[in-house]
Image 1 (cartoon, rainbow over the protein chains, first blue to last red):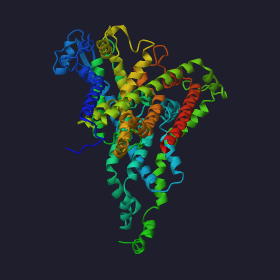
Image 2 (image 1 turned 90 degrees about the vertical axis):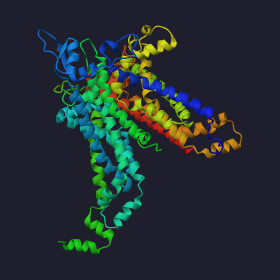
Image 3 (image 1 turned 120 degrees about the vertical axis):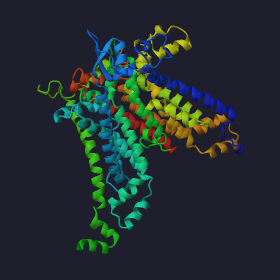
Image 4 (image 1 turned 180 degrees about the vertical axis):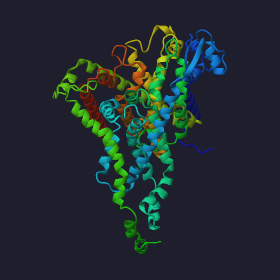
Length: 309
Length: 314
């Protein structure tokens, strides 16, 4: 037992705090649990009243999410696979894959492409801002941050016109460049913070040993900054993954990402909630996993490095 | 084969050798910074200047071949005298004020509770934080399902706890309730953000200050108001700044949740701007609108940052 301390909360205080926090956590998780469980309901169960808590898991939502179907007519081949059987029992037949796979893949390509670029450019700029005397450094850094204050819709008009002129509308390249630019402010600010924390003495020692500045940068500084770079990359990835405003305005087909697509999933009778929930679950899962991995750097990432723990 | 230059370079002191072998520090600095600045100029500053230029014209992006007329400040005059715009500003203000008030109250309370350091607080913190990182559009879309009067979980839970009929109210269909429906979802998503920042603030207060106060026989209540609150205030103000800017830009969540309706009750400025620019295609007019919004955010943010710096200096 530790000695009595005036700042240590009493046992009763701790207990009350624990109960309240857990209550809040449970309430806050309800919508997420509902999303995940709706994905495993049949469409009848999903719209049952009162809302169904017990459920017999069904993969109907996931099958609907990945396939395009039409009503059965005339002679129908007997179902061969488990997913064909699910569709068959509902009086439908599969005519091909849905667009969800493509849209998900677009999210992956654009997310990873823009993350790579913004972390690459951000690392270089952050190193320069951290180590060199650059004229108007503070103004440049503030300018970089201020680009994040603009409402996306406000810059979307000229970007829309610009993309139309350059033939970048609805292309992967266009979206990658756009998200790179949006994420650069975050990546420069975060990485500068991480690099400021690496003692200069390491590089100075390397320089004295005959390394060039450039060698010192990638052989000494980069490995030291690896954790920071990884955390920054995950933040950039999550932003690009979640982005909706630019995606809905600038893409419609080939380069459309999942966020504008998921809400448009429609079944035979209006919105197909199990399919939407299945899509949302698949889409939100990676972010939840990343958030858990990131928890130590979370605060730093969401405040652009303004608050470090 | 070592060239004479290599031999010379090795013979010279490292500082000179560096200059011979590699790029100068200055050159590296510029090579490293230039691509970032260039990309930001191309994707942010150039469009901004273009928006300013368009805002003085009657250009419509769906008729690229029509004559573009210079109409001076007429777009600005029209916007600032339009009563509908003031209604969207009011809707935005309602959203901003209530989300910030609720998130600060709940977020601070949670942080204060978590700072009681009970066992397993890290695990619960991580769980509470989850909603904040998710895609607002996808989440907003799913909340329309939770808000359904017949089948939605939200109405069911409220009716279960408060009594009454879950079908008797519709959060996103009712003009009086719709503005609150977006406040609730935003609060659900972003309270953890305020909580995390407050928690960092609380953890930055050294125990010794409380110990000193205890020696002086200050009551717990007094300690809370004279130590805890002032020391957390700069953090709290930073959280409010971030939430303020983000919610002024709010678009994705609201578009998916209510689409601005019913009527115009949840038409926030960004939602309205999107309609003007990409549905009515009044490009010149909406450019002026965008500039007004941008100036407002920037102006309010810089006044606020000055206040924040004063609090920090204290």
